[in-house]
Image 1: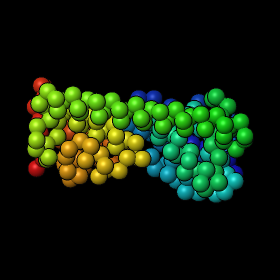
Image 2: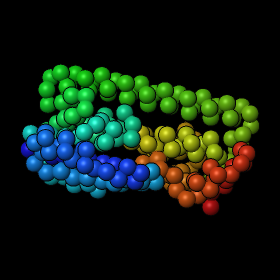
Image 3: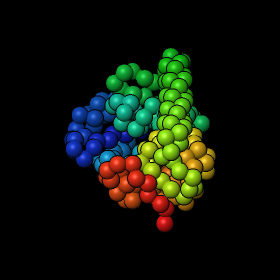
Image 4: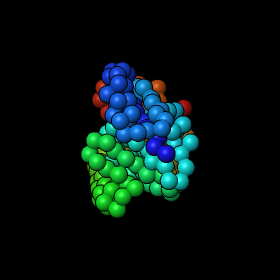
Length: 205
């Protein structure tokens, strides 16, 4: 069975182009989401994945409809493959149910791992530089702008455990979750910290 999924941002608001393409592809059912930049919740995608079984395929118009970043997309496809579900991308002719499609996605997975390594390396280098300049301080329950930005990047990669991220940033797990959620999205107090000028730190409550 072919299950279609389409997504638009609140600024786009038009699903017709995607729906027409999914209809032409022969999708049996189509799910959709209208997402804002403030949330990562996608109930439509969750429902689509829930009903799929071994041998089914998720069909999307473009690859960016199912993920915020390459590592996120690769992780989702990996989860689908464990369930015996393929992915068909109409724009770009990606089809993980074929040998060629799996080969292409293997290259994507390698690039995603490389991207994660680069983010981690830049984050660690930035924190080391901050400590050398005396910005990090010695208090374990303090969140700074630089640490917050690193936390958002690291937590967006679901391969990173919250406890490991907290250790790397020199904050407690409770402080980490006070500023970002499990998907790396900023909470209200994070937005307040990012809006402040200068490099002042914010202590956790």
